[in-house]
Length: 254
Ligand SMILES: Nc1ncnc2c1ncn2[C@@H]1O[C@H](COP(=O)(O)OP(=O)(O)OP(=O)(O)O)[C@@H](O)[C@H]1O
Ligand SMILES: [Mg+2]
Image 1 (cartoon, rainbow, N blue to C red):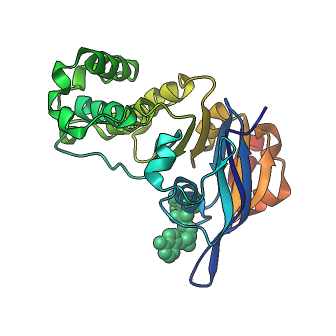
Image 2: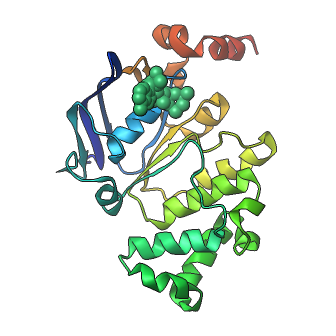
């Protein structure tokens, strides 16, 4: 199968610090990858580089075989590369319905002047309602974002990302800041993502990582130190030293 997404020898330094140090990753349709590593390892920077929010010093990003390095962030979204942010970037005064409708209209390349009328557009509203119901947000669709719980805001971000119909979805800590009581709904949303979508999730909660991922990539000081199965990652001496020591010991003690 051909890669839907590929980065080759990606490098980025801030000042003298190599934050992305010769990173190469290839993803297939249907992949479920967790990208883990210590704080400051370069995980978010990696996402910023592949989405076009940040320019690499060298290396290449390929989307469906096409070299994307010179395509801007909006162009990459059009080609199916969609990300969510570590901290929500929702508009506090807008409603969930408006967020999802805007994503649908953007995806379909329709003029933004039509946005004001989306409530009167049955096809758009049907898709908005379906998407928000799937994520358990149907009852909140016309509330302001500022009035809904943080866990629900994170679910809304997943809804917005999905409305863009991605081929590759990059999630930067989708459960961060969400109370433990609400993480189950996010996990369920992740489990219900389309089977052929390639998903890369950055996450610190190792229990969530092990339930979600079929492949784990470990980044430490900007470089990949492990790329393999969840079963092997806890056994890897380098990973234990750099990141997982306490988790692996706790799992073995249990
Ligand atoms: N715009 C920037 N300018 C200078 N240094 C930066 C910039 N962005 C990130 N860095 C540095 O790059 C390193 C990697 O940061 P990054 O945010 O990618 O880490 P991370 O793995 O996502 O960490 P966390 O798990 O805490 O989210 C850090 O040392 C950070 O301070
Ligand atoms: Mg980060």
